[in-house]
Image (cartoon, rainbow, N blue to C red):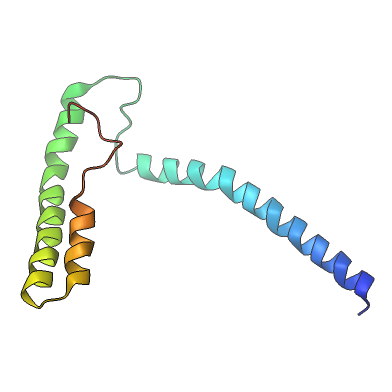
Length: 103
C-alpha cells in the first residue's frame, strides 16, 4: 500500500472512530437513563418527597456498608503497615466539593 493509500485509510478510520464516539456520547447517557429509571424512581419534577425519603431510607444501609468497607480498608492499611491502603481509604473519606451544603 502506498503512502497516499495509507493516509486515506487512516483518515477514513479516524472519521469512523470519531463518528462512533460522538454517537456513543449521545446515546449512552440516554440508554443508561432509561435503564436506571426501571430500578430507581424519577423525582425530577414531581416533588414527591415522601417517596424520595423512602428511597433514601432504603439506600442508607448500603451507604453504611460502603463506609464500613472504606474504614476497614484504612484500618487494615495501618495494621499491616501498607500505607497505600490507608491513603486509598483516606481519599475515599474526603468530603466532596459537589455535596449539597445542607446534606
